[in-house]
Image (cartoon, rainbow, N blue to C red; front, side, top):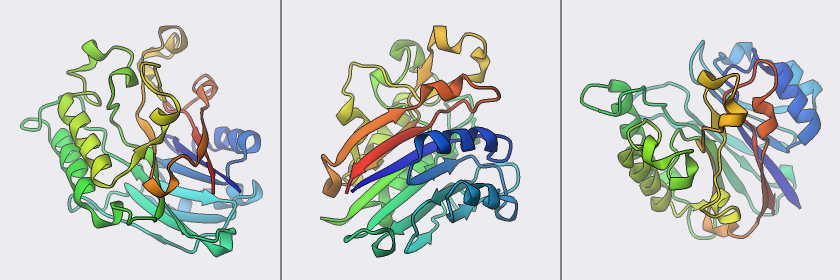
Length: 272
């Protein structure tokens, strides 16, 4: 059966709940992974999601900053949260889908919001950039991010790194810009390889084709014509799911709606 999983940095779930509802009514993913919800758990718009058919939720939120959530039309077996760098800043949540969701074999779904890193790509003078590098290092060694042989797992989220040359509008001009500096690209790649994860978006759409999921607010009027985007949002799968992602859709049109997020929904269809 196909399982549709969407990842979307929504940049405030309460502010953009109408846009989320529009997407859910149209795309109907089975599971929606949100980042940067900027919402404490007790203020999350549960009733709105329930009316849309998404009755099951796993939340890790805080007031005003960060925050991740998973909302689903199918039930979870369990959920868990990992903290990084000695902080409880709501950047990870995972769920296990199993028999209650109609799956014969369990599937673990991780949802991440990696720190953006600020503007200055120097860890000696920018504590935000240092935090980002440390976070990526911890992802590399975390046991729960190393699926065992045969274990079905998916990792999605705003990883805030565009690791490949054609994941940005201009590789040459972006080399000293946070999100595409060599050290960030190396550390994200190390984290992916350490867990044996497959960069499924690039399996289905190999380089040199450009892939973008984010367009800066600084180009509100001409974002589409200038197309200076970056691929900051990712879909990774464990080796046990190799070849089972049949489609990935980047819903670019959602960047053009009124009061958009600077990220757009990315939906993977997994044949499980």
